[in-house]
Amino acid sequence: MDADYLIDRQRLKKRILLWRTFAIVTLLMFIAALIIKFGSFGSGAYIARIKVENLIHNEPRRLAIIEKVLRDKDAKALIVRINSPGGTVVGGEALYKALSRFRREKPVVAIMDELATSAGYLVAVGANRIIAHEGTITGSIGVIFQTAEITELLKKLGVKFEAIKSTPLKSEPSPFTKFTPKTRKATKRLVDDIYNMFIQIIAKNRNLKLEKVRILADGRLYTGRMAVKNGLVDEIGDELQAKIWLEKEIKIKKSIPIRDITIQRGLKNWLDYASSFLQKSPISERLILDGLVSVWHAQN
Image (cartoon, rainbow, N blue to C red; front, side):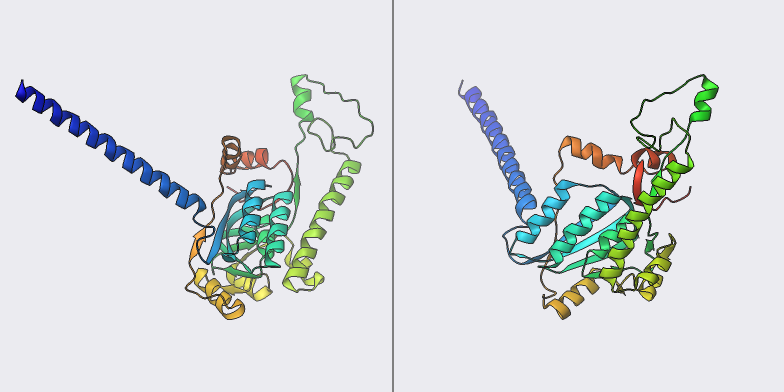
């Protein structure tokens, strides 16, 4: 009986030790999660870093986190890492305006990685300083409105589509009706208006003449080296150059740490975000970006 009792006691101690270890590990993981989530705020001076990747959509959560960093007294500057072919016009415009508001109070440095074209470049223009790698692909400044016409296909299939509209241009262009000269003219005016807004923003923020921007903004691509020469980018470099500029011009010490600011996404938001990865083919691009966009489409 005494031997059985001792064996049971040893087993009980092992189980208690196991559960205590599990509880301690869980607690440590919880504390680490809190540090990761909230450690960027209120814990000493830092330079915030946010990433803009893949297709750019109007994302309220990202705009809110930028505003939160702006109001954080410990955040001394913002670095924006851009690796994007562009996206929706509204997505690029909203992010550009958020960075423009930020830089009125605190400095913003945009760093272009592999790709920063179309709306991706528009976002960069919102910064005080634009830095690119020599091999960065940028430019492709412009706006595109995409649609399709399937009237001949429907005719072959024996399908007739009809719509009762208040005016001829209502819901035009449409895949189910002919792309008439009147529709084309109205759509072109729409694209031209947004394009003019785009180049005016560039001319104002890059201190370039509007005539020069019109020449540069013909849709062509530039390397980082070319973009520095034509005035679209300030210098070649990376985060080291960003910190050197911040220390020299803004008096922010290079020793201040850089901290990543992450965007907390719910399930629905994650599904929308995941759709931005579906850019492997022209078909998937057009499904995601139907309508008025500013994006560079790489040809397969």
